[in-house]
Length: 253
Image 1 (cartoon, rainbow, N blue to C red):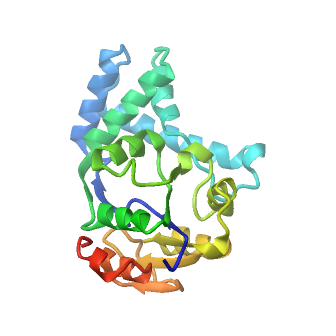
Image 2 (image 1 turned 90 degrees about the horizontal axis):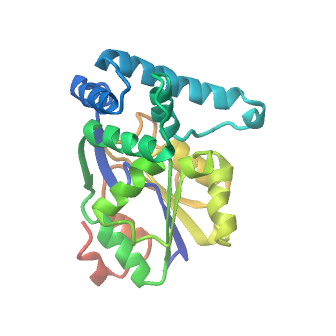
């Protein structure tokens, strides 16, 4: 194998997803969920309150003395769902907040699917003795159930989600949370992702090799200075770059 460790982004790299958080249908569903718990909102009122709360959580964290040095802070979104209950006088524990957040994700998701060959690529890498890791800017309450739904939850040697670490890519500290705790030398590893800043610049800054895939979820950006650049989604080609033997590539893509 060319690398001893392969680190993957998730959405836009292994998983294709489309969500619509502005859908009137979504907010009608969410208002009903809150109503059943005694928190009475009109759908548009709930949507406005949610957007405002998320903005306050993000800006508040960024301006807090504890995070004044942090260029890329991350919030735990379940806190917003919890505060929406509290604003209507309902004491909501973490379990209810998480359940509400997962309902939000369900009703806002138009589709969720693997890119062709994604699971097969991960299996082939592990079969070759490569460490396979997930490093994703993602909310744990959304992503862990989605990994299970897609059958990816057992295909990584470790899963690192930004909401669990209060920091996100391209911040070097999120990368180091993986590299240091798993004793991974940067020169033994490659980062595979679809975002030129978060995945490529962030990885290069900590000494990782990089593979960039331009996917349908990539930002509108110039091609980044990755070690390998794929201008279209092609996980079989990623496998070739990573040194998977040709017979094993037949199942990928």
